[in-house]
Length: 90
Image (tube, rainbow, N blue to C red):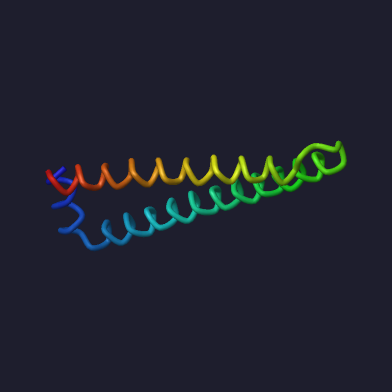
């Protein structure tokens, strides 16, 4: 790992190429996540519309989904925080 860092810091051209590649990968991942969020939102709207037409209890289902999403984000944020704490301790 130290050899790679020394190589990149020693050659500015390689450093620029590595930074450009990293930025392109980051934007690609963010674009794909954005598409996934849009797809999930569209599917959610279609599901709520289906529940309204079929006579289901849409508000209760929306509340359940909201609680599930909030608890999932809470769990993920706890895991990420513990991961960064682990990285800081090393």
